[in-house]
Amino acid sequence: IAGITQAPTSQILAAGRRMTLRCTQDMRHNAMYWYRQDLGLGLRLIHYSNTAGTTGKGEVPDGYSVSRANTDDFPLTLASAVPSQTSVYFCASSPGTGDTGELFFGEGSRLTVL
Amino acid sequence: QKEVEQNSGPLSVPEGAIASLNCTYSDRVSQSFFWYRQYSGKSPELIMSIYSNGDKEDGRFTAQLNKASQYVSLLIRDSQPSDSATYLCAVFNDYKLSFGAGTTVTVRA
Image (cartoon, chains in turn yellow, cyan):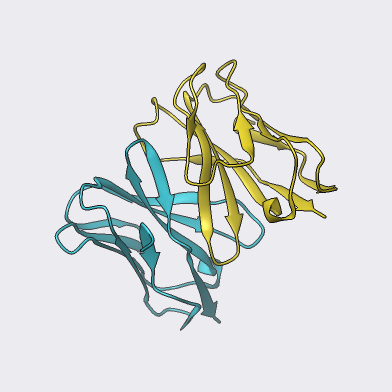
């Protein structure tokens, strides 16, 4: 089934540990995004990539890094996790090169940092 | 001021009624607008897009856009229990999609 796969689905992590959330899509979409969703704050953009080899910062990029080595994969790394990074993380993709707001979302990764 | 603001919920409507959701945005140059639906514990899914002033209808959903007032709305006609979800207003600008906090709708059977 075509779509976006995120892993892990859920993770509990000790503060200070490094964590990579994986995101893979098979729709050959050029643009990919990472959002975090917190109660009362909605979805906030962390990082984005309009095409393979390029990335950009969103609204809340501090403490996170991304890479886009190829079209399909867009991993999000927390170098040293802190409790404020407890959230649900959504990866998304869109056709074109970041010129549309029509996004397809993965199922999310729930991260708890203790 | 947040870039995208939605009317606070939750919104409870009886089955068969019209649910009305409102959204305002701050960046006057924004050109495209979206409504996403998110069921509890699930990921957002796109239900409507609107690019021009006026109304756009798709089944029981109608999106309305007024760029002069920087206002977007979503009407759900003949509300069904399956419409119970959180509705997210989103505005696309400068290669980024910004979301409102969402309005939770509950349709009472």
